[in-house]
Image 1 (cartoon, one colour):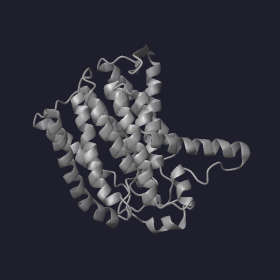
Image 2 (cartoon, rainbow, N blue to C red):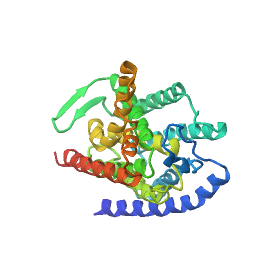
Image 3 (tube, helix red, strand yellow):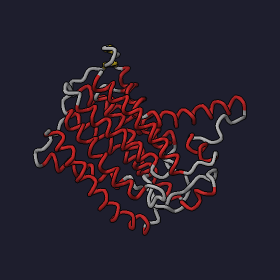
Image 4 (tube, rainbow, N blue to C red):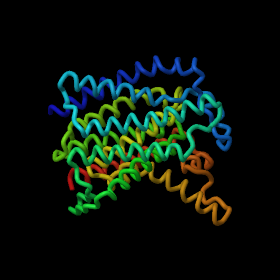
Length: 330
């Protein structure tokens, strides 16, 4: 019951702080003309979103950090290597996204950091992650809980860390194309990871990781008040990269890298459709999907943004329910 009380507490405080942060931050972003630059390939219905403030990820990033510090200072949680790794990854990827968003705004186009620059920064973070991970006594194991399989793969686990962090952060970034879509799916994913993380009692700092997930969940609820259709602010790369990387970090630390695929199944599908479309077009000069990521194909079929978000969230909820069964029960 104590963890349940703490979970409710961090969610409530994070929710309230994110609402206050949004009320204060959005007018500031508007004054700074930190507006979103939209792709020329998007439909006319998206043109009205031109100029909507971006960098809104700060609305849920700031409250999470404040709440975790508050809980630590008042002795409600312990500051350990595990939660440090999660927060480090969360903030590091947020910084990459912030720089990208800032350059886009400054240049007044969609050209932020180059793909090579982003990748180099992500590699550096992954190396630091791997160092901290091994330094804290973790073993480089590929662990399949349901089958009871543990494979010691040594330094190759560093490549898995890089793969998980890069793929998960970019997957959320790709999905962030409709009002409330990435935020809603992330809320579902982090709430699920909050439950699963608390079941990893063998992990030092498992309770802190669980509360971190619930804190993000509360903050995302507050963020969605400003981000649901019609959005008053977008999370930008500042938010999407941070969310995806944090998911990946938690999946690695709790040894649920494979389960991450199920929890984030919509993110996976969105990313795969982009990859498939590129490969298919390269060899045939034709498009397999009307437009990618796949949510834009649904738009071209005539579905409204709200209906698409509802459908994708339903898939996310169902897959997360199955993930909880595998991650907690089995």
